[in-house]
Image (cartoon, rainbow over all chains, first blue to last red):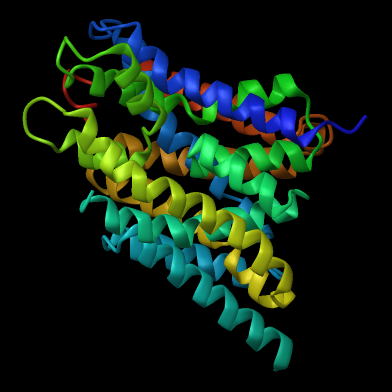
Length: 104
Length: 228
């Protein structure tokens, strides 16, 4: 059964709103539990890494452009290039490689 | 508000790549505009459109949002310590609505107590930029040749790399966690028994909780170290 996109969006918005607002409004003490704090500390890095790979290599027309875009992104991010710079450079590399594959 | 300008510019461009993902999921510009404006989340938005694309259940959407956006819980916790005790609940709610990685970044760098209006200034530029960027991604993304759209779709991943790699360079545990995530996520994507039975959105949740829990038990974070 297809789902309604507006309900999807409502679920997204409401869940994110509660995540952001509940700690600010309800809990005013610091979290004491060390494991919970550590878990919350690692979550963003792990989840972004899991979402990035291998999805990035399947996101383009060929896996070669995806792999090179990934390598470019990792190197530039490692060198401290800004968020915007890394995103644009990865796109640029993917585009050039796709063009080469198509027209060579 | 001035601190919001570079954020807004970045959001306009990155929002565009979210729009491409939204278009892939079958969303139109109007829906994408509101999804972006109401969620203000890049990873969260991307994960959300993934669930939509796969026609996942509403429960799956709810759990995905909880897991992918769990970091905002921590950021809001951190910001709650910077607010004056007297800050009105309404201010706390509006401020909370606008907690993104970047806005959290600039507002946690404010010296002393945080005035909610500092955040409102940044939000007033960043939110319209983000939502229109995403809507433009859907509109122009439709008109773009396949090859350009496909190249632009890696932009969001480039942004994720820019968020996770610099801290990984500083912290060996994060580095190990990122590498383990890459490897396990790849394994999950090729193992037939997992690939055929568990949606990719669910895989993200399972791997995130599993890897983060293991890291938390083996390498508990010391006090103050998590004040990113």
